[in-house]
Length: 120
Image (cartoon, rainbow, N blue to C red; front, side, top):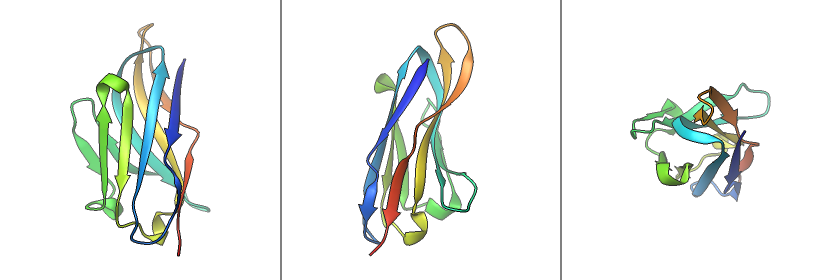
């Protein structure tokens, strides 16, 4: 019913920047919270940042001051600008959206993930 398509991952040197994008499409009435999670090898998936439809944001302590989350409600798209990247930011990044569907249901959706590798 809803698809989340991520883009923007890749290989970057320490101190570099990347911008992730995630576009939602399908039977969407509106989207409440959109967020980015990440999962490194051998670790649990963790919240990186989230943003509400009203623009309120929440960040993991490890990325505060380096990452910025934003969204375009008209395009159902969320972005994650990642600056001053560190090797410990290496992970698969997943987009997440809490969606009010056209049939009045409310559901949680995940993207397929995009790899971010920070290495010299």
